[in-house]
Amino acid sequence: MGRINVALDGPAGAGKSTVARLVAEELGFVYIDTGAMYRAVTWKIIQEGLNSDQVDQVIAVAKQMQIELKPGQQGQKVFVDGIEVTDAIRSEEINQNVSWIASIPQIRELLVHLQQQMAVSKGIVMDGRDIGTHVLPDAEIKVFLTATAKERAKRRFQETKDPDITIDQLEFNINQRDRMDEQREASPLIRAEDAILLDSTEMSLSEVVTQVLDLCRTHV
Ligand code: C5P
Image 1 (cartoon, helix red, strand yellow):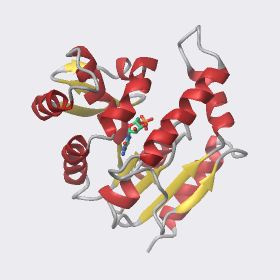
Image 2 (cartoon, protein in one colour):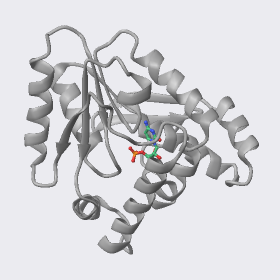
Image 3 (tube, helix red, strand yellow):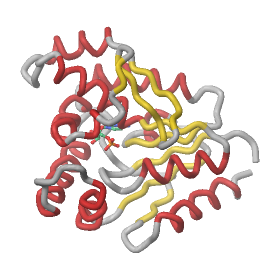
């Protein structure tokens, strides 16, 4: 199989990151988690004490900061200005704030440019919300991975390190984030016309990975 790019989009908690990481490992490709890049910006903005009324300052900070993605044992490690934030960017506070940051067109422009540069030499599995529609519209394989909000909340609940959060709260947060991602003006979350729709509600992780790998391997 030649070197191709694989775009994996879908709503929060659909399992994109795990699927993308395993598919990349199997194919010997590089995995890029673009959500982590929006989360890294969000982490920095919170560190700086900025909020949604200060969009100009938010953009200025985002332009100055340096984001690095490095391969690690369990997926990718994320660094902001040399500080490791791999775990810190998974907090509920970041979950709650990332969508307003990701709705700012100048921030998207900045990150999309970086993402496109990373994919130039192909052999990439990239996951996000706008990869098939906007970042890599020419990707050879496009998959839109989804599951019901209830199922996604259930999966998140099994992974959460927050002892106080309930499944209902997680489902509410997921629905809220989906709505913001779907309704924003700049590159909203939407299935690319040529993306294969995979509903993983009733599928196991390995079934999803196998299906995506089959799609990649049948590509000529
Ligand atoms: O995939 P993950 O849940 O980590 O993404 C966090 C958030 O980053 C999403 O809810 C969305 O607001 C934003 N995002 C985006 N475009 C991408 C990847 C993520 O807007 N390509």
